[in-house]
Length: 96
Picture 1 (tube, helix red, strand yellow):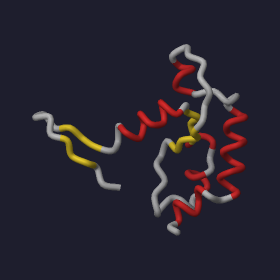
Picture 2 (tube, helix red, strand yellow; picture 1 turned 45 degrees about the horizontal axis):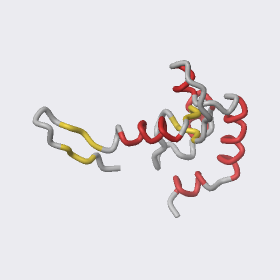
Picture 3 (tube, helix red, strand yellow; picture 1 turned 90 degrees about the vertical axis):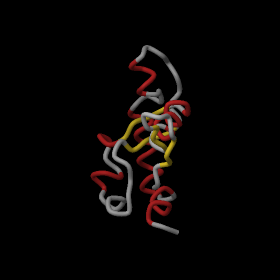
Picture 4 (cartoon, rainbow, N blue to C red; picture 1 turned 180 degrees about the vertical axis):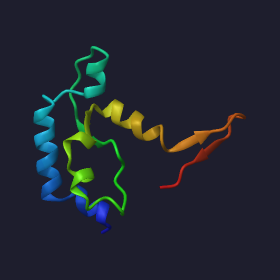
């Protein structure tokens, strides 16, 4: 199991997720900015976790790097980063 997968199954992440959801009142932060009330489901890292930063608690566990999102907002966040489209409409996957 790689470090990132190990992190997401850790007790530290489970406790942080639970605490952050409670801290944000269980509501999607992006939807709230648009006046919508929607349950937050996924705790998202604003700065993406990488093998180089996954063990840095200032990135992996810090509330200021987290955002509570509904499923739709979280999927939109990640799908927006999975490919690029050039001026001619050609789609190119972004490798992880």
